[in-house]
Image 1 (cartoon, rainbow, N blue to C red):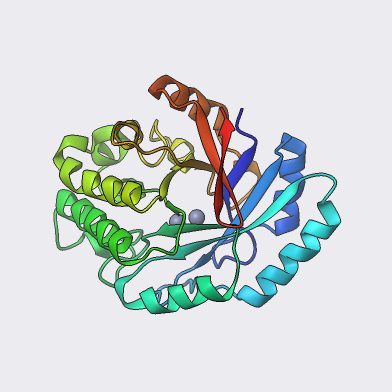
Image 2: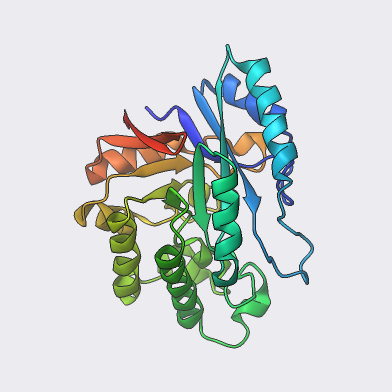
Amino acid sequence: MITADYHVHSEFSSDGKSTMEEMINKGIELGLKTICFTDHMDYDYPCKYKYEFQLNTEDYLKKLQIMRDKYQSKIEILTGIELGIQPQVIDRMNELVSKYSFDFIIGSVHVVDQIDPYYPEYWENETEEEGILKCFMAIKEGCESFKGFNVCGHIDYIVRYAPSTKIQYNGYSYPYYADVLDEILNTLIKYGKGIEVNTSGYKYGLGHPHPKTEIIKRYKELGGEILTIGSDAHLPEHLAYDFVRAENLLKEIGYNYYTIFKEGKPIMKKL
Ligand SMILES: [Zn+2]
Ligand SMILES: [Zn+2]
């Protein structure tokens, strides 16, 4: 049974909608044993957008310590971060992860060629296939050039922003991208990194987590074993979203364990 949510946002994320304390109380109510906050830090996030995604790391760590002290008898609270990977900020990310000791670091690509695919402008000058491929290429390059993370975040989440609903709802063709996806997975495995199973895909009605089932299967086939489970919740009601469904999916694929991280070290937990 999955009792740890390893992708949770709070008021320390620019797009956070709830406080740490609200998330923690919901986690206790749900019977979670562990909640790992992973607020956003996206260095050099384009300033044309309304959010900045700059984390006040000192305040964040202080608040986490206060929360840990207050709730230690009820739930384990861990310190994570979701780093937005872009090629020009590798040095700054390395500096950050060597300065502070995080329990867990998600490496995510949220910006491709200075554009956030969340916004329609990303899709204006290319086909959906090209847009998706470009994002996978950026993830591949990110995983090759930055090593300071534990799992690669929501690998195929870009599909949910593709303009056509056909692509969004299971329409994207895994075989079309299989080469670049294999390169991503092989790179992750080679460097001892994991992937996350991000259940926000279920929340968006896609019928699969991010990444989709074929990719989670392929990671296993290639020898990957490190899987963290995260809801990517920005609201308490989305905490541990569809974790039972994710657990069933993983068991069907043949996984017996999921992973949690403490002080950067993976710990395998029985599903
Ligand atoms: Zn993300
Ligand atoms: Zn997130």
